[in-house]
Image 1 (tube, one colour):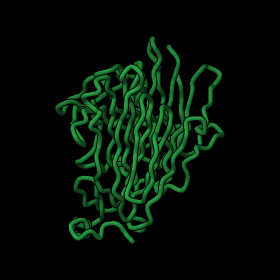
Image 2: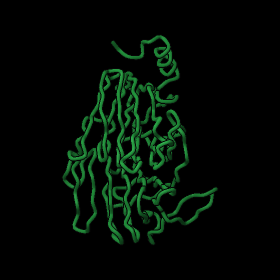
Image 3: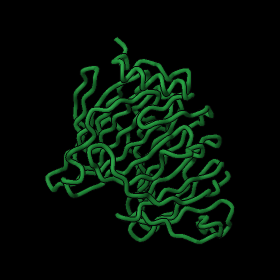
Length: 302
């Protein structure tokens, strides 16, 4: 087994989206070649309703898939196809926008006003850019959870892991989306398909990820052209994403409070990207056609 080297560590940046939702962005709206097939990851964790209640009113998507994973509170959604629903704590919605859809997402806090969830965008290959839109809404109870002998817990949202298969199926990039919790002080090896791009997003607790190029297991990150040693800390206000290079496993050492992170991997599409806002195509001409369709009210197929 080969431990994946660490390319870099990314700390989120505050971002405002929708009608004024304050969130933290791990990556997106730039060169996402290293994350291919993934385009964007947002962490919308907030305890102030004024910072999220205006939500994400009606907006278009084409050429991508959006994956919403709710941990606290709920997200009410609706779309131009007539679908309506609500995602609660632990639920997932995997939406394939395909040739085009208009939808809205309105966050609601829990009884203490807390709202927490993630939205991941995955690209579609050119052959599926104009496929029919579809939803895969998954309730928390339908997501398999595995507990290992050392107390490590893994929720399998998509893909196969430790003999369990996630409920989301038929996704173009053959991704694996895991919610991993490693108990305090435990050291864990987790397999990752060698040819897939992969990252870990830490959102609770703390710990270190071993760098396969460093036999001492010290996590390194590039800062301003130099090398600095760093502790990955997923505590509130200091969210961290670890981008891995190629290999067939990662190694994580949990800190005194344990560590919880998303482990996401997928097969690179390796196609040109033409991207503006919520629409991602392969060429500028296709992108311009999408906005022409929006202006002419022909964006939604009849």
